[in-house]
Amino acid sequence: MARKARIERKTKETLIKVELNLDGSGKAAVRTPLNFLNHMLESLAKHSGFDLKVSARGDVHVDDHHLVEDVGITLGHALVTALGDKKGIVRMAYFIAPMDDSKSTVAVDLSGRPYSVIDIGWSNFKDSRVGDVSKENIEHFLESFSVNGKFNLHMKTEGRNDHHKAEASFKALARALKEAVRVSGDAVPSTKGVL
Image 1 (cartoon, helix red, strand yellow):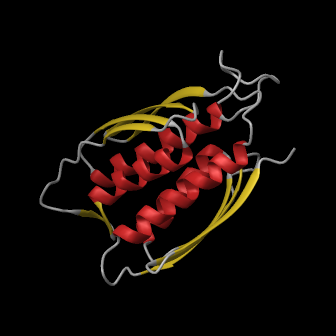
Image 2 (cartoon, rainbow, N blue to C red):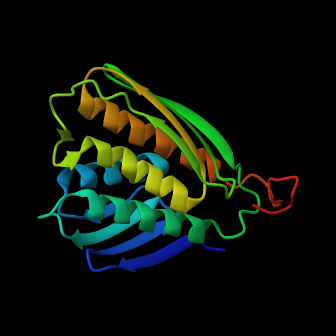
């Protein structure tokens, strides 16, 4: 059975379209008005092995918040849909990704119970953005993805360069998700019998 999803979210502030294939080859086609978000989503696809298409537009003339949040929400819904009943998945995984001065440790549990603990430890407080995305909204994207993807996300990132820290965070998340969604059997990985 194909583990794919196509989700659209339309509000007065944004229009987001996401296509996700968990059994892809890491192809990305990402078009949003936020270049740094595009870069992070392309990295997520590449290192997870997911095929990902994202088309997004919204009121970035006001702020980047609505668009970043709604992409996270829509991607989370796509993950839940693509996973289906979760039979046979590994479910829990972790990865440590170094990137130059930075290192990100991520653990995930595709439990159906959303929870996130995210600490990217921004070091350069005089700059509120990385590229064209607010630092607070990078963390908010990750939280929105976790909550709407119904998974536990624990992330701790260290380093000096904020671009490296953000990128290490997305790479570690991608590699943890790659392992967590891997099919290793045919049973639901829970004593409850459902996730």
